[in-house]
Length: 564
Image 1 (cartoon, rainbow, N blue to C red):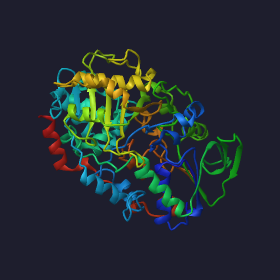
Image 2 (cartoon, helix red, strand yellow):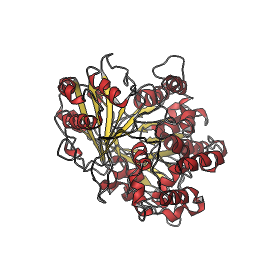
Image 3 (cartoon, rainbow, N blue to C red):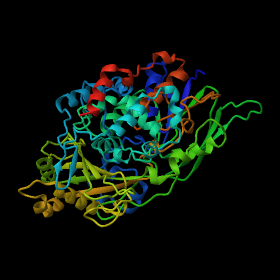
Image 4 (cartoon, rainbow, N blue to C red):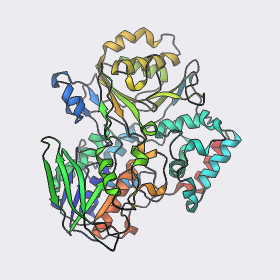
């Protein structure tokens, strides 16, 4: 149903993408589009600590003590798969590079700083592993091939099947180099959805031949906020869009119907989180409501160098609203599958800022590579899983410097994460979730020392490294991997649910054919679909999505790699 105006619930990437397509493809004026959101970046954040919107931090840290930078997560791009994202970035100016689009900015930077990871996996006493050998046996190959070759018409056979269950007779799979790299590149867990793993196998099958070096990975010039979100914000504001922040939508009103399943939003209730004032607005017949119905960074909290990040038990602003409206209609999904199982979804990250390059230089020496080229994962030297197997302790990304435009020339920013935050450190005897920023750094130094080939061990510079720290910010994210949680296809609503007249869903918790989630690609795609629907643009004009699972050459190369 064609509309003339739009209300965006959430101001993350997917809804901002929808606004760009409504303006450029639908011919809308920007002042017809209004965003209501807690923030202007969604999960694509990154800022000096003093600018964070985290409520816990702001209430407990005087501004004069806020130093360094923080990014809750980090984004790796891939031009071959992220076709909708690159189309979007090609439509807006860069926020940092004059006379370039955001796409040209990213491609120019990436062409000059190609990713080639020489130390994808590291293990104590072994150093850098030969990760080019994926480590499959014949059972691994058979089950993986069945998963990849499963027809789309049979995908529902994987409803509510976890990866662990799919490989239940093949525990060896979880001791392969392939699994260590796949789980830490994409943040899968053994309890994640096998259905989602299948989709990744389809869209990223070409990674089989290059995952040990990450040569298919592309990166933005700066952090995801300044290189992706800020160009969108600047463009949309220039077009006249209104972006109203510090608003939490708490309820939607729907048209009452007796004989149909019609879904028509007629009003919204929201709370101004700065004043606690409750507001209500009416939604008229000419207005579309485009709702990002879940966020992987909802309820995230920050700690600091001397304080662990606390647990926030809030169900999540976006997911809470989704749960409320899903209870009123039969076809709007099941948010509990994603937001009621923190054991499957939580993880902890940290952003380390140093005043010099001492640690950076040590990492470069140990991994034999320059910053900006790696995702280094440290394997345990002893069994740490419930099945008594080895796994990855932690992973770090050493960005090309500077990672923020306001960084001083001598400063460095490093990001890392713990996929299983309830596990305990090898060098700091407590669960990662309980560690301060200082303790996370000590754990990192221990992991580096474990694989350090010498002759000068990093331990000899530990005091100098600790003295170089400006800050290290731990971040607890209860829903970071929620989008991978084990589920059925019907547990996520479609972008345009059946019987909906003015409501669309966008983001990582919507069901889209063939799309893999946890990517800027799927986020942008959902916004594009919503925009085309409400602007009356044929879906045939959507950006063409490649299907690498149907490319014979790609499949042959992947098959060959599985047997090396």
